[in-house]
Image 1 (cartoon, helix red, strand yellow):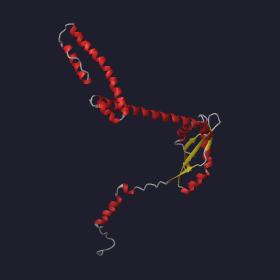
Image 2 (tube, rainbow, N blue to C red; image 1 turned 45 degrees about the vertical axis):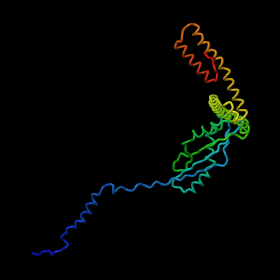
Image 3 (tube, rainbow, N blue to C red; image 1 turned 180 degrees about the horizontal axis):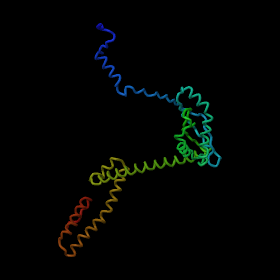
Image 4 (cartoon, rainbow, N blue to C red; image 1 turned 135 degrees about the vertical axis):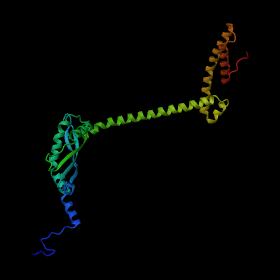
Amino acid sequence: MSTQPFGSSHVRQPLPQQERRRWWQTVFSPASDLTPPAPVTPPRITFRQDVPQPLLVPAKGDAFDFNVHVVYFWTATNMSFDELRMRAEALLPWAGGIVRERSIDLAREHEPHRAHDLERALNNLLTGQRWPQEAHLPQFTVRLRVSPDERVRERLRPYWEQRIKLECDHELEKIRARQADDLTRRWAAVLQSLQDDPVTAHAARLTGEQFAEVFHRYVEERRDIVPNLVDLLREAVKGHGDLGLGPSEYTQAWDVALRTYERQQGLASPAR
């Protein structure tokens, strides 16, 4: 009976524990480890093209033109910036024809001096539109600025000069009115405070002859009103006495008011 020598190639030796773990992890690894990388998105190139010469489109009545200043924004993928710029320059006449075709009908609906209204309407119409429709080709969008015909500008100049003058004059008058109101309130407060001071008739001269004269006239006019009011109060108090009503509370109150007002105004009533 023959026996195989120890270590023969027909006898499988057990794998080390570390190697068994690697084999197990390779077979049953999470699916996320086997997910292929996301495709790389090609970069998108943008080129701004400012056109030096405006497009001319007729205004309402066909007597004047609008100047349409166009800015193109070109975009493309899988293309270098220099290549995109060269192709945009080559396609400029074709792009200008598209913009003019889209603008001419709308321009004829606007009067020659309504350039701003046309500009807003055109940008609202063309915003978001791209040409050409094929996405793999260079595409452009536009932004427009509209100015009126030079002859229209000259006719509008006198109108705007007059309007600017009127608005400036209006603002100037409002400033004057606010200043006059503030000055009046301040002088009223000053005159009122000076009137209650017994030395103001002389102290007012320290501020200048013009102010002293105005203040003196102000005080005299106020004093001219006082005697009439005092006479009315005296008649009211005297009348109650003639009727024999006696020293009622009503009569006493009027008498106290009369005496107080006479003292404030510097008027001495005859002793009663």
